[in-house]
Image (cartoon, rainbow, N blue to C red; front, side, top):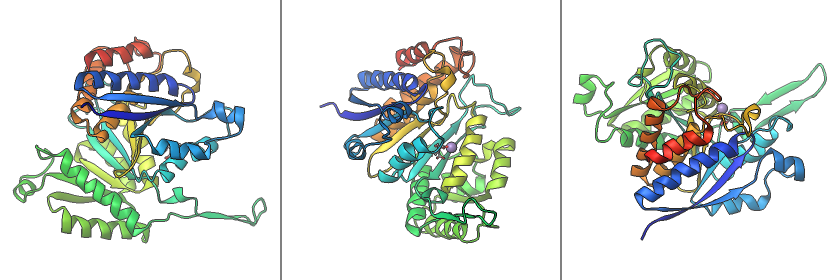
Length: 369
Ligand code: IPM
Ligand code: MN
């Protein structure tokens, strides 16, 4: 019997609902071709609902979402709502309460996409960032003293647990192995291949300054890698140097693992070298629970309702969702369709400059799936 997936669809704010609709179209087309069923339930969480009701996310919502197989999210962020309220109240709350401890962000330049780096092409830009997603400065540990006075003090702490670091590392090592089957990473040296390595995992940190938290990361990285994943080559970069290499030699990366805050920052840079927010997707993953997939870009209020926003990032998020649900072939087919569209059907990834409307781009992908 065909599998059926129950998917919560949170369109969210601005252009979120428009791109989420096209992602749904691609997922449904994949279901028709690869023989699985999807059942979408739409939720109206976002700025409009908050402005009307004063409620960001009802308490019952988290439990309801937990009962789905996955969540597909459009975008969160409303120009009339103070920054932080919706981000904390919806996005971060769901990441934390559903324990989505991995934020998986592929950085891949698709054919036909304009890259801001001179002399770099699709064969040079193809890596994945595994960002820890529940710890670091995102935990909200800290506070003020003497707030609003000249003696004011503010503290915000980067908190890491051995458990949190270990589970992120294990996921990253396993992801590196899986990604490189059946073919090893071409960036490996002959000696690495001889030694049986299949791929490379780079830890990105700041061990020269953050001598507590990234010391913990570094020790765990080598201990776990040595003991359990000897076929994965281990490498280390400071985060500032990593930003430099993203621009200068992105082909040096296979998989990166890093903390929540650094991961947030470097993946925006990553999105730019893969052609921009029009294509960058991510997954908030709980490997043992319910995961949530989203385009990395925002709600783009000025393009709302004009049918000009690029839905491909959301479509790619849909493909990641299928992959995580175990529909590998379907995910690959959606990705291939996106590549065909970037290579042959649109002029640019930017809103209004694609030469096609949002719905047309969604149709082009669905037809190709
Ligand atoms: C992201 C976003 C969020 C983050 C914000 C909106 C809280 O920038 O998903 O990268 O910092 O994680
Ligand atoms: Mn971010």
